[in-house]
Amino acid sequence: MGMGATNTLDRVAASLGLVPEVSIEFQRSVDVANGGALFALPALLACGLLRHTGKYFSLPQGYYRLDSIFILLALMALTRLKHIECLRYCAPGEWGKLLGLDRIPEVRTLREKLKHLSNEERPTNWSAELCRDWMEAAPDEANMLYVDGHVRVYYGSKTKLPRHYVSRQRLCLRATVDYWVNAMDGQPFCTIGKAIDPGLIKVLEEDLVPRLEKDVPKQPTAGELEANPHLHRFTLIFDREGYSPGLLLRMKERRIACLTYHKFPGKEWADEEFRSCSVTLGTGEVIDMDLAERGTYLGSKPGERIWVREIRKRNDSGGQTSILSTDYCNDLTSIAVGMFSRWSQENFFRYMRIHFGLDCLADYSVEPIPDTTPVTNPSYRELDGRVRKTVSLLSRRLAEFGALSLSGEIAPSNVERYERKKGTLREQIAHLQTETERLKGERKAIDQHIPVSEVPDNERFSRLSTQSKHLIDTIKMIAYRAETSMAHVLRERMSRHDDARTLLREVYGTEADLIPNDTDKTLTVRLHHLANHSSDAAVRHLCSELNSTETLFPGTELRLVFEFVSSQNP
Picture 1 (cartoon, rainbow, N blue to C red):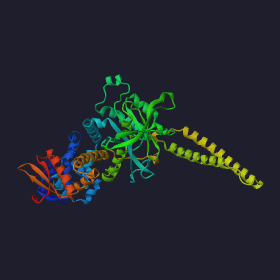
Picture 2: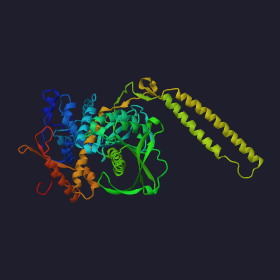
Picture 3: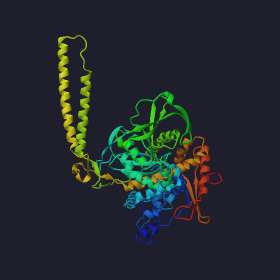
Picture 4: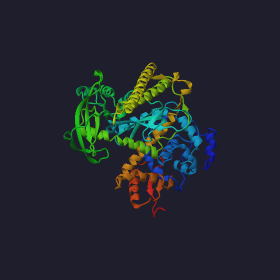
């Protein structure tokens, strides 16, 4: 039955199908490792950890309950166990005490249950409903959405994924791309994984915008949109990858405002156009920015030309950052704050990679890609690479030919050598020009994209498991949101706000005593002292806030009570 298994009778009964599920029973325990992680349970439940799970998920009859599996995965994320394999090196009985069980499932069992939970589209549907709940709970935050792609590198050997440029490593590596939607403060709303990346523009138009048009709350009514031609439904903010006059025009026609950086800003503006503006960032910090604004047309084609607002910020170094906006209602300071708060999403990616194992695999399985999925034609890719190489070589030869000059003493030998060099370069340039035109003609004659079914067998690849990763990512989103809400409470008693998450990580890894009281129907989680008095004071305030929620441990009637060890309570 495994190390730490003591509930033998119930385990045998569950294996024989005699009990539908095992009841949760807590025993008085002292110095339980990672006991402080239970401090996050009220926040996890408030953020939706067990919301709608009964609607979308079910487990075959057995020993472990559905809510116990979800709570275990969330506590693993908060205690920085970045993937399931980490449980091999953890005491299963100690973790079982946190869940009211004799022990947690072993890694193989947990993987089997995760595979069962990830059948069909259950994780996607569950995540979508949670996204709608989060947006409904914070309509002001959902009015301004940040969209960006996160490249998830794959180092395994199960399949040869397409290569993507990874900016943080400055390398082209085999990877998939996940597109995330976040609020201004970095809070995540949803994510969409793409094994074959079609680019930000296509993902916006084909996947995200149709969904957001239905999910974003408090959008203007049809009458309000008709009365004010400049009014928009909500705002999308993205980086230069989404720069496209055509996209901005199509989004404007759908009454969606866009903010992005100008990809071709042109000449710098005169210093006289800038004025100092006091702006309030999403963090509440007030700073001064030198801003200027103009109106400009984008697009060279008559049917794609669009009038946009161009706002520039003058940096301390004297450089200028250009922002394009189709938000015609808000002032330039609001637009500047919205655009420059985009780094909150980059900070979210970095924090999730380091602390929550965002790039870790949920399992090692791969799935076939649907035959109708369009992919880049391998022949086109090979020809395109040859064209780029030839054009690059041609550019170097043209530059060398233009820089060649006859200098110094004009001796017959120098003139002869000069003419010979010129002639050689002229022949090479003519050959490269002919070769470039030939290769471009061959590239133009074949399709750039073909369905997967037409890809040669030696060029085909599979995609990584999508639904299990989506389920784990959703639980990690909930864990991040729970940690964020707890950090806001701690900051009310902390002078250094940036240390709130560090303190929470210390709390999650601290030992605690578990004291059930069947008479009062309470489960006391008594945390051990932390490193210093200021940390203790901040967490005592957190205890007060958590106790006011009167949260019941799932599957029981025990109310959670949070407190500190003291001399009066040894």
